[in-house]
View 1 (cartoon, helix red, strand yellow):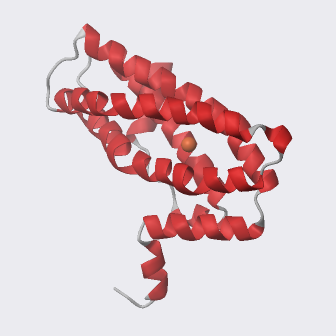
View 2 (cartoon, rainbow, N blue to C red; view 1 turned 180 degrees about the horizontal axis):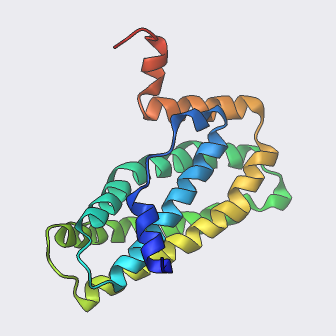
View 3 (tube, rainbow, N blue to C red; view 1 turned 45 degrees about the horizontal axis):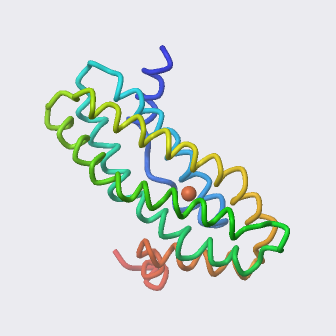
Length: 189
Ligand SMILES: [Fe+2]
């Protein structure tokens, strides 16, 4: 199997991040990053392929439109504020978060365009050169963002956050996914 087929195959068989990983919410966030990386690789391959990949385009659109917004909220609303509170001056967390925030603003502006392209492709329309370039650029930016988060943000979080912080983060992530209500009704259908 060549690298392109491998990336496309992996992305096509991806399942959402398992809720059991919320035992350590940082493990859950790390797994989300692995999924995002796989979808980025598939997006770049999709931009180069001449084969119809409607199913895959639909899966990537689903990830970008439904799962990624939850992940972004986990980080922006909960993880990053906790890091601001706990990090030491020498961590320079403010500078790192400012850069991530700027990246995110650009990604948020480009996401609707990428979703439109993917939906057109999923519906059978061929990609134009401009469409392919937009997909590749979006994936490249996302991958750079992921490298920074995996190399700096998660290692700092593992060192600086307290067990109470992790409990807070877990609860907020569960609430965001409606899982806290399930826990309150263990015998619910
Ligand atoms: Fe992230």
